[in-house]
Length: 547
Image 1 (cartoon, rainbow, N blue to C red):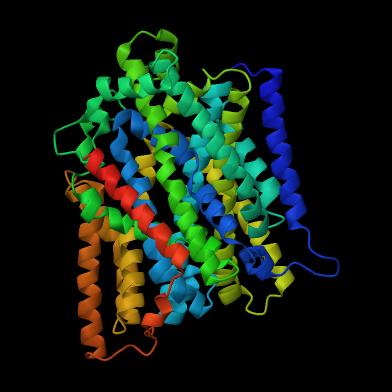
Image 2: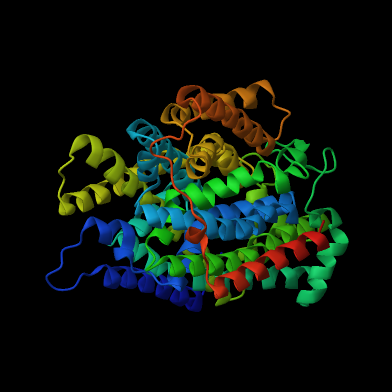
């Protein structure tokens, strides 16, 4: 990718803006020393638009820009189900889960488990989350981000990983969540604007300069890529090793609407620290809920930014006319066309100015997610591990210091592991599958903890202990079952165990830590209701059109 002076100016301006803003918002008023509430929860002062922007910036990363575009190349629009169902999930979380979190006054997800169950459940799940954040989330985002740098600029993978980690650390570690959340507002602006520029280019290429003709061409030349529900044996996709496999294994038909996809989404948006932490940092419940609706509308837009370019790349490759484009899509070592190279390849074709803007958007998506994941990793380790087991009397200043050190260590470990992901064809599916080893147990523990007062601590601990072994057993003993269906089955098994153990142990009585749920807890504003209805209607219309 040849950057012009204008591209360098735009990209450098973006980097300077983020670093400067991160530093400015991290400063405290004269005489005030940053405490744990400031560092981990942004002083609980975020307005709705900052909550919504930070939710999206934390969520949309290289796994969407690179990974989901790659899945768009391989699978088509069906991969958008993650985005559109996430918009619906945000509404559910805002109505049913956020009020309980804020009523209980919690700061971390493990803290909720301590209040609802006991310290054993809190500790086991805290360790699970730390492992997933470092070895799956941080690692995959670093790898995909570095892959884009390698494809676009020719930067060696290892140097790209190191550079992204350092950039994210420079603006986030000193200021904590306050720096992350407020810079996310700017990050989302670059993310959306730059992403739309790439979509515009991709459609223009396919349509010979006409965007609408380009979209019509996609519908005409890749009709199989515009169906939301994929049946078994209907579509074969690259397996990353030169062969093919059934797309049904990634998106198993109607299960994406009524099965394991709900486990994925509710677990991610409702019980995931680096997501819920933004809502917990809001000024009030009303601000947090409005922020969720704002994020929901942005999620509806994301497939246009991250999936359509992947489908356009598929059409360009399928036409076989642009040999340089195909060469860029091809892995130099294996000689195989790699789905995850679709988005970086498109960026190389952008004109001067837009190239710098789009690259800034991609970088914004990467570093904002890295900063969010590292901050939440440090939050859980500091408040749920260090303060509970190592130094119960740790001062506010020491907690902040431990949080910063933890974030640095997390980045270091992830940077070492990240190059190992280079064997994958669709890293987005890797993230979903291996996060899904923990998701069924987490979802069951929380959902019963919220809405069934008879659920006991031992039942929750059993669920935590069995979620990975059961998921692993299903993966290797029944390889023909799609991982989304596997997650649904594991959730059902664990649910039966929780119910059985709780009824046997508690003899039908309510657990003493059961949460009292009342109707008045779920009251929402008129603006929230209007937004929720609009989002639900748009989602229904999209599935009807692209069924």
